[in-house]
Image 1 (cartoon, rainbow, N blue to C red):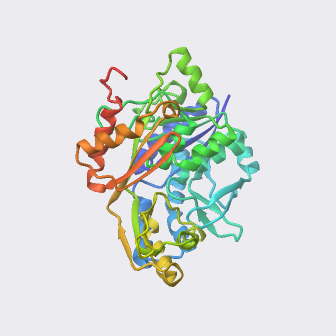
Image 2: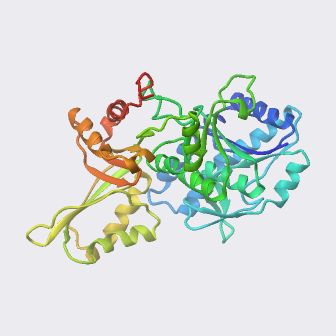
Image 3: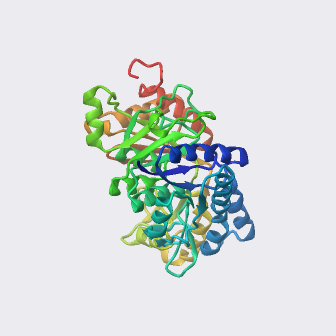
Length: 426
């Protein structure tokens, strides 16, 4: 008998028919003798709908009230799944974030799980009850509802798995594993048998929609076994361990798989893209010590993540332009904060562009091979795709391009690195 946490994404929960399919998958795990907890996302598109309501009500919305609105999506699906399980003869109940409780710290809309009180939850599971938990939400030190940021249900699932000492955490989504890139863009994308925690962290941070970044980091820290699976496997779904999903593993385990011949080591593991970035340019910033700090300090205090940063060479008049990217959802707040600090920073004007995209190549093979970036730049140049900004890490190279060229760039790079399914390298 195992203790299992199962997480189902928005597409898996999109409507009563799909929720019934999920209920049957869950019941089969319990029928096999396992203790089961389920973490659910809001129905596909529901969170976007709720976010738009917030923006329409107030473009510079209060994040605390935003959390109250958007947390409701997961509350609905957790209740519906519990009701569906009950209708099928299973013992089930929903546990909202404040009922466990899931204690969080830091900013509203981007809270971080600090602790989960799992005593009541474990007692419920041991009594044969299926626990249904809304992902994405918790409770702050002030007793108010908090949310964990987009994709936060993955983090909720991993945190619950760590709290109850689960044998594994199965993440069910609309794809049956982690692919070399989005298969909706590249038909020749290949499913990977295994991906290292480090690679998955980078892929998640630069736009891969399979897992949220913090969920992977938490799994690596807590030693939680993650398996990425599809909930769309037919009415007679087989148990998770029998499905060819993707395992998220340590680099040591990956090396063992390569040595056994179960995996081939690739120079590049995957290509990710992200259209949720916005570019900000501050013109004629004084070219002097401390000027850049004046720009980024207020953004950091407001918990607005800054990604790519470019500072042009100073002009003759001792001025420079500073370009950087922020999440699109934070663009209005970032612009307002910078306008408030205009006199302190000393810039001339703000230019923004939300029609940009970030394209990234990721792979632990980069650590020991040169030329990855050169291949990227050359391949994009040959197709006339202009690079607006560049950022790198030990196992990643990212570029910013026009949003309209996203799909072309992904296809070009997928082929350039030999990732296409019919390539000899595959």
